[in-house]
Image 1 (cartoon, rainbow, N blue to C red):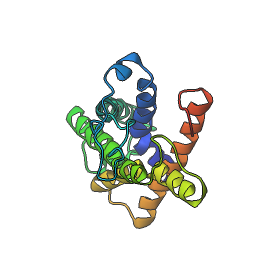
Image 2: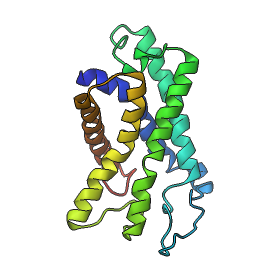
Image 3: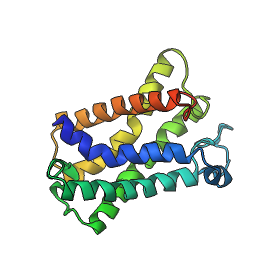
Image 4: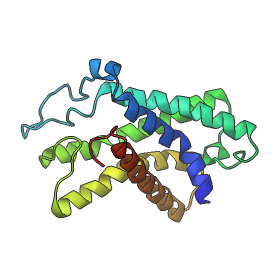
Length: 193
């Protein structure tokens, strides 16, 4: 079951890695306009912060579409992957469905990060940072699970999962997120874990 969950999450994992590399490019830096337009909320703080950009929002969706098409190809043409991706429980593995699945998985990923960013700005936590103490621990955990909750909700449309499986997807996604962030930190792509 864990292997099938990983195969199901492969497009999101790959898209996240590609997007992280993309945020280090000149193209990204040239067009990194904040989603909130630099506007302030009633409390005088940014609404989402400078790290939540339109180009990052849309690039994650595009990378997820591309990744889902690639994953779909492997799932269709390699026996080992065939039948192991839960996306294809209710969806036929074809180009249109892979574009749609990639779009909604990518959209869920980025959309579910926004409430966390909004709350962190209200608590004066800098973009891309956590805090110390119990608040820091809570936001470290939320930072790892916010996007995977959205992804899992979308997956639950295509795959009837139990409550246990739902939380296993979130746990698996969170652990994977931490490990990938650690690797990206070690190779100096990320500034923090």
